[in-house]
Length: 139
Image (cartoon, rainbow, N blue to C red; front, side):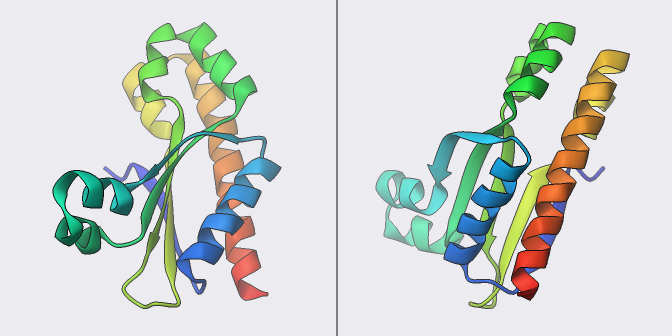
């Protein structure tokens, strides 16, 4: 089972992070949390661990309207929020990978019609953000 939507774009890591933030904001997502995995691994496990993972950030994205609807439908869905979006450096220096959670994962866990509606909306927004990132990479 695939649980992410993934694109690889011809951008530097820093460009991809900036473009991803903007694309998510355009779709109504704010960033609630941010985890710099490389920095965290370096601090907690040593420089080798940080270098091994490379540039890698997890953005905890949240669309308040969608989150509110999801929690009203099933309060337990809070365990799956916010929607995590990963930006990481690809093997090539001038390429980055952007991954979003596939909101249909929530539907598979829940089955509720209300959750299905929220997941479909979230999926459209996240795919639109990925499309915007892809389009920005072409410019």
